[in-house]
Length: 275
Image 1 (cartoon, rainbow, N blue to C red):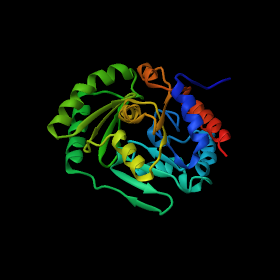
Image 2: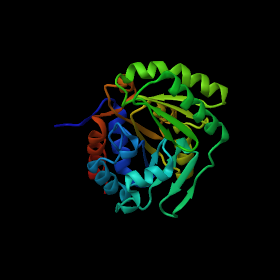
Image 3: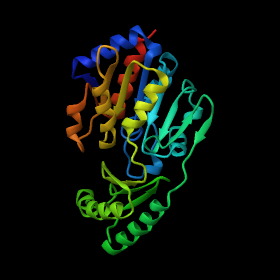
């Protein structure tokens, strides 16, 4: 059964350009919902086995593979077991929307310090949750951000709607950015976006054939960047890991994949076309 399909001519243009110049290829991917299935407890997330194998097979064939995530670098390294996987010796992880970075080639990790504003906001969120009495809400400490997960609530949609204005007020009071996602509200100190992180990687690597794979609202700035850069010199492709939770993202896709399994199949297909 096909788990991905091309939606626009850009998908075919990307494949042709990648085949012609694999060293100029940059493939960037989100982690949760793209490489790893969404799970109730984010601490138990793991890379889809087929996605891990496909990414490891693709890594040595292209100029650069990168993971751009809202998660801390250390957490993605742990959950993705990146150091244990053959073929990923050159991967770059841009964590917390690019506020921190790990380069597998050098082993250098640049973690940021936790801002005081995030610590204060966390206390305020905990107090608000105690007052609201919402069961199933889980807080995730991301260092430069705090995630409020409602996936385990009896009614996640209602909990999200209740907490969103509360989170917005706390974010504004502490000078933080509110980033809504799939059953999660994230308050972060950095105004950097995945678009900023992807632009930095493109400038650093000189890549002219660029794909971004993502599944959530936080990936939109990276998608917008690829549409902006798309011209006769730079060939780009937007791969959306589809979800019933955010159907509007489908409109952005050059390639639509059926979740992490579909992303894995697309990565494997790309790898097969490359020398």
